[in-house]
Image (cartoon, rainbow, N blue to C red; front, side, top):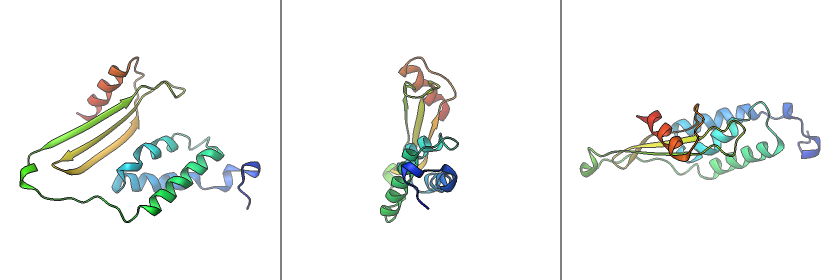
Length: 138
């Protein structure tokens, strides 16, 4: 089967399966791929050859960094420390004008939850996008 750009037929490539695998890994083990998975997952019905290549690069990255992981440590100095980091980008680069939100929640030095998603609200400024992102976490 030839999957070069010239002979590319999306039906011959399991793109949705690849997105499903990366979603599972993102949710349970790899917070560093959250943005890439979110971005590739938006085009499950209309993916292109470039999207397929990006998914292959992401899979290669996951394979090469499989030995890395998240470690949880106990430190009595950080016992009560609870931090949330939130960020949003103003949605000027997509067709709907919606912003992308991401957050990471730490208890002490340990990462316990993370997520990246497209906001349902169309923000008119970056400050409004940040406020909407913060309200989604709290």
